[in-house]
Image (cartoon, rainbow, N blue to C red; front, side, top):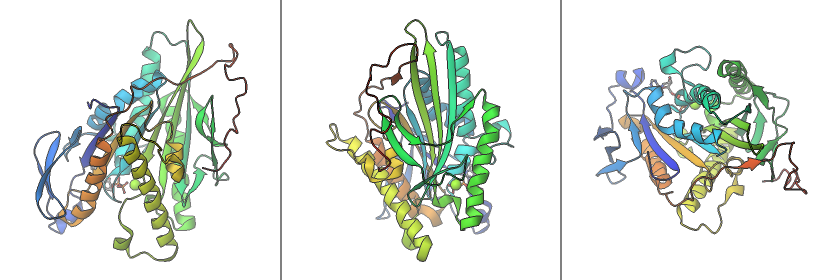
Length: 363
Ligand code: ADP
Ligand code: MG
């Protein structure tokens, strides 16, 4: 585990059937569970090291145990967390998040989303000092800088707001209370199907949007009756491939430009967070970074999974993904995570002028 509250890992998926058939070769040399050798832009061998490297023999549970378990444990104690999968289309982002299918997949292949959910419920059940708790789920996608509610497609341009009691939140997003992990899976699969509906209606490939699963945990703990609230946002990012490579034009080019802009905004936020005293972290430069504002940096925990194809033919894109991970790894100087707290109805709020519309819908 890293000594900062940002964990950065790389995952190489196995060679695909097509890559094997085309005689594509593996583009890295494994050194150990934290480092590998990869050719840089000048074709020179460079050793890259991360908190953990998952190779083609890694299990979904290895990924969960290493990068998500600490985030789950902290969320129950009121600390926000983010888990992001980054990489070009086809690199394994969605597989890592959802497994081959959110509803129908065997235990071994279950993805991070289901594991995080089950982990949250386990932690809540076994935590001795928690009396009552609620877990809420929202699911949205960001497409062309619009936030769409995947649990209610009529809400296709949600606004991001901020209040003292709730922190950053997506105003009007459907929030469902869930009682156990399997309850939620039905709704999550509806959300994923909605993403697919969007795909056929708008000819939108899911890799052109960012998909966010938001789990909020609230609980009251005796004796002070405060409600501690932590949230975990899992982000399956849009493909990070370069526009030029796709030969895009028209709407597809607009999509690619918007994606590049929001991924750059994420990179800029990360760069600002890597300086010891960032003067200005540009969270407001994109919807994605604005939503992540109180879950990335400062008092929260974050994990980045850089997903890479293992093949030579994809090595330039993989290198760019690895470089993104290297930059993120520099975030080492953050303060220790501190819990966020909201007050229960039993006690008066200390924020007597609490305004949910403190900032309106603009970023
Ligand atoms: P992305 O979401 O990054 O575009 P996917 O997660 O859809 O990519 O993965 C592309 C293909 O590779 C899918 O068929 C997926 O099942 C397969 N795949 C990805 N990662 C793994 C893995 N670790 N093990 C086995 N198959 C994988
Ligand atoms: Mg995907």
